[in-house]
Length: 100
Image 1 (cartoon, rainbow, N blue to C red):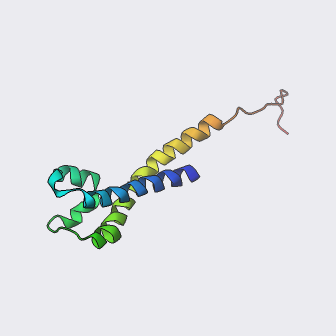
Image 2 (image 1 turned 120 degrees about the vertical axis):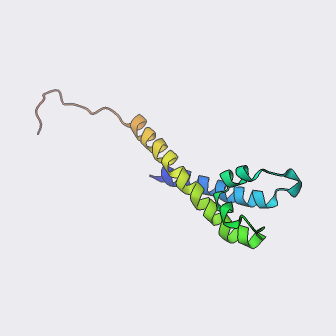
Image 3 (image 1 turned 45 degrees about the horizontal axis):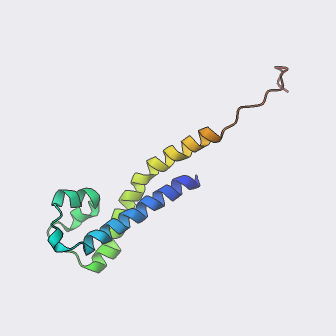
């Protein structure tokens, strides 16, 4: 179960860094709006205004991190389930067929 949590936290950290990275991206880079909204879903909250750094760090970053963290849960679950299947050893039978 720790693998699921680690995967989710890793995705959340990436999501937070993406939000901060978009804040520090130079204005001359002209990133299209569709790409910004695709990689930072929390940017929909600031469609008409340019957010300040505290807004990005304290509101948009954590919202984006939670979206990415939830997106990491299925991947973590798949990895955990695959890991459990690969580590499972076959059952040992006594050979008599009788259950005691």
